[in-house]
Every structure is written in C-alpha cells, then in structure tokens.
Amino acid sequence: MNGRGTARGRPATLGASPAQTSREVELVDSRRKLAIVKKVFFICIHNSARSQIAEAMLNRLGAGHFAADSAGIEPGTLNPLAVAVLNEIGIDIAAKKTKRVVDVIQSGVKDNYVVTVCDETSAERCPAFPAETMRLH
Image (tube, rainbow, N blue to C red; front, side, top):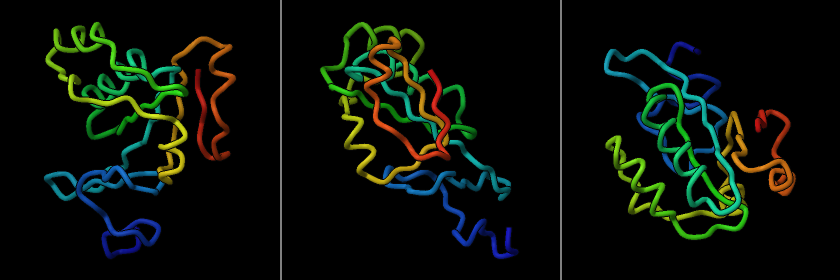
C-alpha cells in the first residue's frame, strides 16, 4: 500500500470487470478494508459442463476470495445436465454462453491460477500461459 488506498500504483476498485488485466483484483469490502481476490481460470474441451460447474461453484463458495472464469478449447453448447445440477443448489447458469480459451487470453485478462478440468491428453492441447500463472490439473 502506498498510503493513498492503492497497491502497486493501481487504484482500489469495487468489483471485478471482465476486462480487468491485473494479476489480482482489488476489492474494498463494507468496512473499507482491502482484500486481494485471486483470479482462477477453468479450462475444459467444450466449456459445457465441468468448467462451467467449477466456475459457478468457486464464485459461490469463494466469493470475496476468488473470482472464477471458464472457457473451452473447442466450445460447444451448455450441457443441460450441468444447468440442472447447479439449479438444485440455487445457482442459475442457464443464460451463460460457452467461451473459447483463445478469446479470453486475447482479452488480456491475467489469472493467478489456470485449472484444466479435462483428461491429461486434452489438457496438453491447452495454450501456454505466462510464467507467473500457476497451472493445475
């Protein structure tokens, strides 16, 4: 902190915009304390079920600590079973669209963690990420 409510020269912001390019998204809670939110990017082949479920669950369970996004190597259509399973626990993803990994990378978003939720062979098809991004499988 530099005494002006900023970290590393960036102003503190409320909420995370989809175009956020910093490694860490800074949020100010109701008590005006600065909390660092880690960005997590889930990748699978079609972005139709596993990555969508992982994104929704982490955003729900890790709210205030993590901000999740997801995409697929070859995006397909949203799996209705994934929608139904999440609806059972009160999470509605019916309006979500599948996304391409390359589009998310080209948007300039920087993530702290990249998690592949596909089989090993498919995970090898994932693009390279900057060295400061931790990749998990």
